[in-house]
Image (cartoon, rainbow, N blue to C red; front, side, top):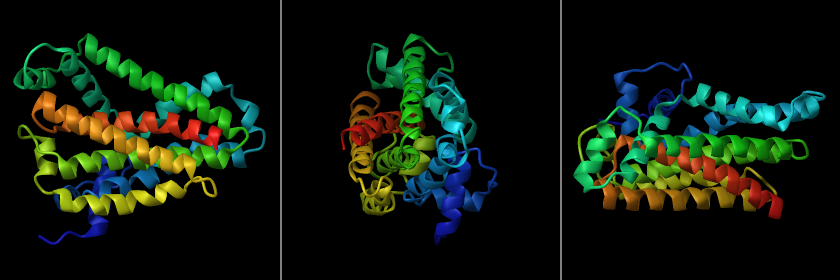
Length: 264
């Protein structure tokens, strides 16, 4: 079946966010056959997530209107209002699987358990607190360099989506489910397309290249670590792994992006 790029991007946008673009079998099929569509939607999603920091540049007095401590939880709420909380379920499941004793089969059983254990609760706390801390850093940055703050948010979202797409291209699923639905249609030959789509995110801090490059490098490291862990601990990639990778790469990318901007 021929894949229509626009249908793939719209399908990815509908699947990876709560933006009301509609759903349909044709768009789903196009999306799951086009890994490059995953980082492609990181640009519009990232732009939406960055709106609170963009407001600093266009709304008079907004830089001092809200304290940093208030911006942080507001950004967390806004982020999950835009992207949904499905990926957080993957974070919780992998947190539980990471601390369980046993082999890969036992860990996969834990992934299917809807109850959240201590490992899952800790993983969720780390991700949400990490996102809030990143928002506080970005709020402080936005007061002096709003364009940089916006660029880092966009780059981190593209990077997180690119990390997920890399796992789709390079991973194999251990069981049927969302992971197999995506990985079965792609392979390593699709990876260059993912890289081409994600590469422009390195320019979001132009003329400073360090923040964007650092964010994309961080996403690459997260993807490599997630793929290694999934293969050695779970026997393959699953939907939970894909979701957790996206969340982890986003949070790590935001922190590294701010650090890189500060040092550049």
